[in-house]
Image (cartoon, rainbow, N blue to C red; front, side):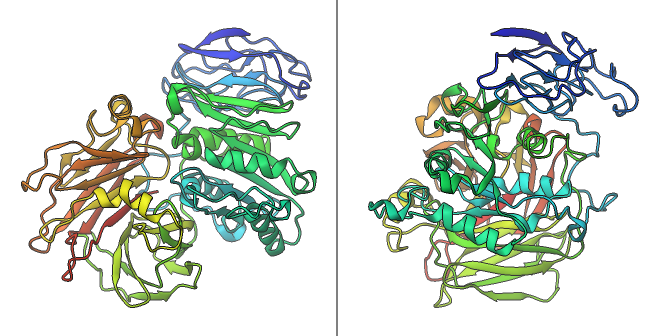
Length: 564
């Protein structure tokens, strides 16, 4: 193994695990790189990197404007080489794709030259879904433990911003505490959830008859299920590319991109093994961010297309936007919702007066496609078949259509999964609900909450992320948070009518903190979220109603807030 220093970050240039890839395009002339040939070969070299912020060493024909220190999109040259372009100090750039069997580490920020904070009030760029690239294959995503299809929502929106057809990016949701979706039902085992991956692939190909293969992307526990699926040659023939996120299965000879991070579970990378695996090791990303971060997106885009993405921020789509998804219980992903009421919110967090949308889901919980105003916030209230309120779900202003929406409700012993009581005991049953205050469940689809990386979540002007309830220090204090705090439950944990923060409790990837949000009289709750260096240049502000967390019948009513 050979290492090279570039921009203050070490890149591992390992010898190839499989046959050397060919290409070598855009290699050389950067720090540490002098390879120009058609074949990257074993080990490879760095190419076209900027030595420091604001400087570039590539040709004017393939370089953008000078970027600040620490910027540059992910890239690598073919054949195991690491092409580094448009990069400032501490960052990697938009070079070539990692060659088959190559390995490289990525540090620094992603190129955010395509525009400021997201989402803005206006749309200087519109990437129309109607004009998406019809040649791009359908993509199927399979989530991990306590996950759902929305774990891939950020990357799906970024792919859509770069011309992919978002209607072809679908996800398989399954009970992560019991289902075996990669196992064939014909094997005789008849395991719960068997054949689910194959059925999902067959279904998406049925709806896209011009294709015979999909690109398969799997995260965490999902990688084990996908590896099981791919071991069958007939099933593997339905997959053109496999992207392995934070998992260590043996994938044999399947052409695979494996992405993990130095801060993955246990603070160590988890990569697939096999004879044709390209590994990308990120630096700052936590376990969930590997499935949702901008850096992961850039690597996936390069792998699927052979080129760097044009945009690394979500761009506006057509107006109105479309949302589509599932209503399901948290973590075991079973359907209990039958009615969804959708209302647009104004700037004060109250219903805007726009017509209410009332949708009845099917028995599987599918929320039919709904047209909503672009860049407007919305409240979605969920009810069971008897009309009982289950909870509220809040979508910040959306720049483009969202087709992996997951409207969550608490798991219960009677939700039909067989593990609902276990999940409730580790999640919503730990929350102290009350009629005088709100209970918010905040979730960022692109990763866990990381205050040490600059993440900031304010509730009515108060910063609620601390070293005790989020980030690496919280992981050290609670084994339950080893993978990061992907969901933050904020409520008056000690009942004193004050926000004392801290870590009130924890569950698998779940953090519980003491935040008092007065709901004794109607008002708004002002939320501001900045992810920090895991997704630089991004921020959200959202005002929502202060709904009491117990209804008039004494039933819990959580408020789920999604930052997507």
